[in-house]
Image 1 (cartoon, one colour):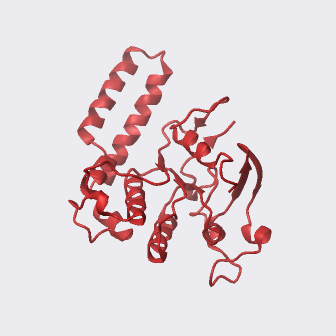
Image 2 (cartoon, rainbow, N blue to C red):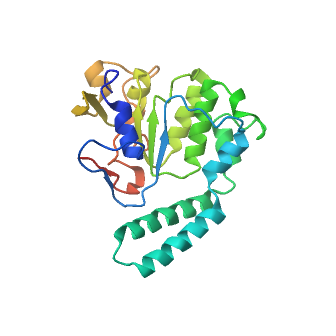
Image 3 (cartoon, rainbow, N blue to C red):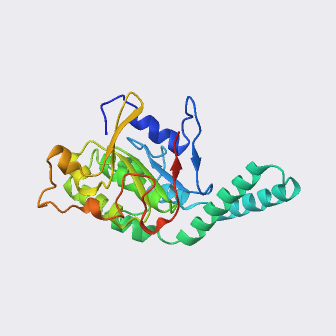
Length: 247
């Protein structure tokens, strides 16, 4: 949480690897941790379809296999270069996820209310909310450990938001979200960061005690207590991995 321009999107982009920090280092543990990033205002590739968008997200298994073999050979011949071992681990993780997730697309699309669209439907024909849900579907198919979502509830009507929330509730990793919807925060957050001017100013767990807000129909017990829905990268259901070490 924080005012516009305080650095929320920049933080997500640095964690996603889209931007570099001005100082300090970002390190993941384990090094092959998979990150899924959904930026604001997702714009699918012009001329593409739902099917082509999902196919790219599922991963090219032959290409990934060739990359794993190339990196394995390079690491064997140059064992003193640790970056090759990190690249190998990352490529192997991507290949494993692509293999395990093959064929999951119809179920994921259906869960997000997109299953009735033919796969050859142009992605440009989708509404803003449908594009957001398509973006989330593509990220889920990459089987990430960490989801980074930047204003994901923008352009979502009430039924779309309900499907979106159901998908997040079923996700087994960590979710770090930039969002202004206070009812969404109150219903899902297990920890909240407030930042300004690029610095973390405070961290608290109970949104309701600070802002006195409860989700509609909620008498005080919130879904924020469900460890599947969390805004902090070091709290995950099943402890799949320790996530981000931030400077």
